[in-house]
Length: 418
Length: 86
Image 1: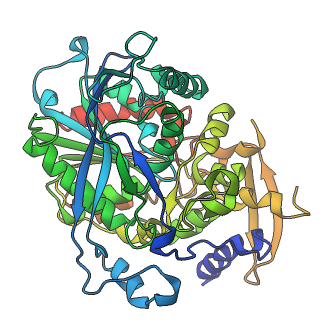
Image 2 (image 1 turned 180 degrees about the vertical axis):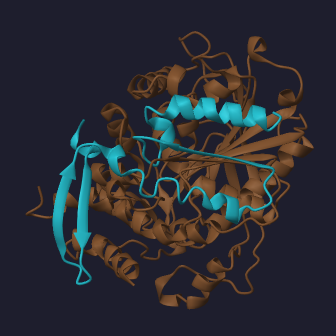
């Protein structure tokens, strides 16, 4: 009884913290408000990481078929509770084709191994509000060594085809405060002989594309560039879409349609919403992954939303109208540095990393936030190997020990608080 | 240890009034309460798994990889995959 009272009380904390100024999270947007941008990444490009791995970036089109009985709109005027129920039933609400930005890295020749590991690829699913760069720590996105796209003449030597890219690369490398030797998952795994495959959840890649393309497109247009429409943050960018996308990508990796090699074994790691996606994937498709690593994850659904809410996610366009004013309201992120701490950090870490993380955070979507916990249930038929790794409970997704309180984020909002 | 790493101990009454805030300095002091409980649900929720490897890292938050525990986490993941036959 007391536990329930505490639970309900905790649910009110974000309201208290906001001073009852409820951010307009989830204000539906219409199609006409959706966000479009140019995509340069439709062809493959090959690059070499600083640890010698060869990486191929590809855009892989994935088509999701509607499985809901009805078609729903996120337009507020036409809102139907059936939309919520369809999400709860793990339905795909819209048939659509999405350009998934992927990157497959294979170990350098000196790190290659023989045996089972040589036929195994790590399938990595990022969390919110991150993007796939979290698996690299250093950002290798713009270091093409053999561009397939026709770059314009450049006075700068290969591999930097133009000065704008050089600037972008320099900036991105300079800023990341963690050393890739120590903190890069892909580096560590590539050096241990594993191939890695990263991808960006539907709706998430756009910030990266936008910021890098702003630099690139100042000088030239890429051949093959087209328009890529931001998916609806409620009816399209939701966890079941991520699950189905992951399933199709894994099928393609196994069949050799991505890069030609037929990967015999898939091991997968997911963080946060990526781990929820992975958990649900092996529930719905138990044979997709031979081993899974869930990190930042719990099956204890009771505490997910209080912890999630403590991150004070709000519509991105309200958090920073200047930078994100054109992002639809159904895309959201942690609102303050303090709420970033509650969402992701506790204990021992570098403050520089936190600040960088906060300033370069990406988006979550309303659809994903709503459906998150529905994918953290049991996976009764999964027979692979399971690793679960968490912090010791000082941040979200875990039981509320006294040290895991989300309260810290609220302190700046409570006048009399220390 | 910065303020972020501090613990906050609080009680909330059913009325929703936040009554007491007590700041402590050692996070790990209270870890014993629940730290191992939730991760252990994996045994129940994924009952047929071939093996289980559950890790809880001290002084570490949600984004384990970007904490000082990150390198250890990766080492443990490698060991887990090796033990799983990969």
